[in-house]
Image (cartoon, rainbow, N blue to C red; front, side, top):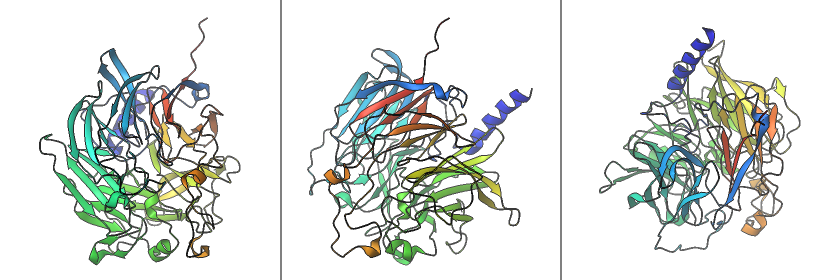
Length: 531
C-alpha cells in the first residue's frame, strides 16, 4: 500500500513541477534540459537506478560528417521514441551540426537514419572565431503534436522537419538574423523561442519568438534588451516557467531600465507577445560589469516548491540566486529570496564560476533539490557542506535542498553535498535518483595576459581557435548518487575528445553525449549474461 501511494505521489509531484503536457512519451528528451523549464529532470526514466548504474558501458559511438566551427561542433542531443521511419518504428537521437546540418540516428545502433543539409544562400560578413563561429549553435526542439523537430540554420531560417524522414514540414521561415549566435530552442503553445547574444551577425541581444501555428504566416516577435552587450548566452536559451512566463539572464553592458537597457539582470517577459514585465538586478551590478562577470553565462532553471514558483540562477561571479519567479527581486527589483557565494574569489572573467545552468529535481519524499555546475575551486566564503566527495580543484557539482527558513518562512538553499573533481562540469541531468554529469575537458582560457579584467593591459589579445584547442583533456561521463554525490560510475577514456558548451540527454535507460570531433555517444547498461 505504501509503495502504491508513493507511485501516486510521484505522478502528482511531476504534475506540480512541470508544465501540463498533452501526452507523455516515455523515452523522449525533447529539448535542452528535458523540458521548457530546463529542469534537467528525466522524470519518465525508470531503467537506470543508483543500484545498477555502475553497470553502464559504451553501447555505440557514431562519427557524423559535420565540420566543427571554432569550438562548436554538435548541439546537445534530443530524443524521440516511437518514431515511424521507412524501416519501422524506432527511437531516434537528433543532433544539429555547426556545419549547417542535422542528423537523426537510430538509438539502438547509432546508424544514421536521415540527414538534412540546410540550404543557406548568404555569406558571413566576418571570418568566424570562437566568439562568433558562424555555425549552427541552437539545440533543436521536438514537437510531438506535429511529429516535427525544429532547428535554426546558419542563415537564421527556422526549419520544421518530419521526425521520421527529415522531410520539410514547416518553412524555412526567417526567424533570426543570419549568423547570429542563438541558443537552445524552446517550444510552448505553438511558438518557438530562442535568445541571442554577442552581436554576431549584427543581431541585437534579446528574446525572439515565432508563431508556428500557420506555416504560411509565421509571424516573428522579439524583445531587445540592450542596444549593445547584455547578451543572453546561457546555453539553455529562453526558459519558460510553469507560470507561463519566459525568463533569461543577461550579460555585461549598460543597466538603464528607463532606456530599455537591462544588462546583468534576470528578466521576465509575457507570452506570446514578449513584453517585459519584471526584472531582478543585483545591487553590485556595476562591479559585475566592471569585472566581466556576466550573469548571462548561466541559464536559470524554473521549478515549483510548495506554493512558490522559483528560479535559480548563477553566472561567472558564482553568486547563486534563488528568486521568486512571480516577483523577481521584490518591489525594488534588487531583493532576492536567498543568495550564496560559491566560487571565483579572484573575480576571474574566464574559467571560473558558472558557465551553464542549475538543474532541479524532486524526490519521492517531496524534497526539492537544486544542482549547480561550478568551474574552479570552491570559494573560501562558501557555506559548509555536510558531505564532500574529495578534492575538486578544477570544478565540481554542488547540491542543495530547498527548505523553509525557520525565521522568515521563505524558501532558502540548504547545502547538501559537493562532488569530486570535474574538469569542467556541464549542466547535470537527473534520472531516478542518479545525477549524470559530463566533465568536458575543454580549455576555458580566453586571453594571454590573465584572468582578471583589472590586471589586463588595454591591448589584451584573445586566444585564437587553435590556442583554445590546446591543453584539452578527454571528456568523462559521471553518474553520481543524487542524495550524496558519491560517484557510482565514470566512463574513463570511452570519450577520447573534449567538448564545448554541450549537454546530456537521458531516455529509456540510455545516456547520450557528443564531442568536438562530431561524434555521438550512447551509454547503456551491460547485457545480463544468460544462465
